[in-house]
Image (cartoon, rainbow over all chains, first blue to last red; front, side, top):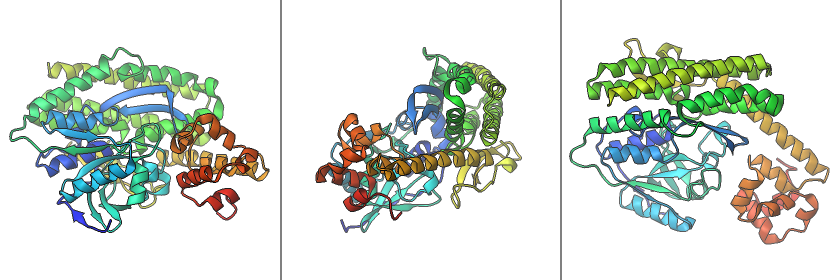
Length: 337
Length: 133
């Protein structure tokens, strides 16, 4: 491959890969939706504790909705169609990508962080649902806009094949997302309301105890038993991983709670509803509480002090988070009734 | 989180900068760059130390002749048997057998090639093990 192609795409830096990719692709099509707005409209905020799914050997905890959902929801609610194609054959997947780029269409790719060479080594874990945008090629490489990087980066064809066809927990299977262009008129207010409604539903009404506000409570209660159940060493490793998932992997801080607070602020202006401003402030307080949980956990990890008392304390912070989030989403659902 | 409280504790990520959402003086949410947060640095170091320990442990067993280089490179690539079997496209119990040094010596060349390709190394290096890295 020696041809070069470049689309007139502008890189935008963001906190989170999926909402960031979606936002910058939407901008490309003239829909000016910030990352936080996309996160809210796509109902990105979530909590789930899946002790039976292991990621890098630790139980999976997520603070956001399932990979791919956010993009589909956000773009769909703004009236922008998203076409997703999967590939079995890597060569065909790359041909399809080349074809798009030659036609001047930037596309979003699901990739595995581990195989992307431009990340600092400390980042390279097997997380297979990282969303990046390919918008050009040059020589034997592709020009990539990775939302969590400062500027555009390049990636060789071989590396991109590995990243797109990795075989981890959320195996991307070469998924490629293409936005189909924006409609003439966009009803942002309606999209915001839809996003809020779904967020309230998943945080309050899911009939399973491991997700939503109930999930936080369930996690708080399970956490208390970790030292007994897993022993000192494993408990500290698991706890460390919870913090990494909450604060490290592009969340904007506080397990996406700050990003959601930013969304509520924007939503207040769009819906002309001052109650949302108040809710945004409450969400910020919740985010700070999550940060407190992270700081306390890290202290426990540092002192290797997995005594039961310490874990009771952590559990109390979490129960408080659960209580506050429950109240917040209940009041939030009142505003969009 | 207030804008002035956005942590700037440089750690494991070096030059990389992340984005935090924070509130500025007027109460508006803004995007603020962060070079890291000490609690995250602590748990991150802990996680990578644990990885290092596991790699060292497997390496020792490999040098004693109990485990094969496949076991070593699997750890080095942060994989487990399940993930590696997905990458190679063979069943889990076969991968598990290949972790044994004795079984590994009898592996066919084509299988060695497949392992080497996944690990991103040459067949010779896979057979030799990690002597020079």
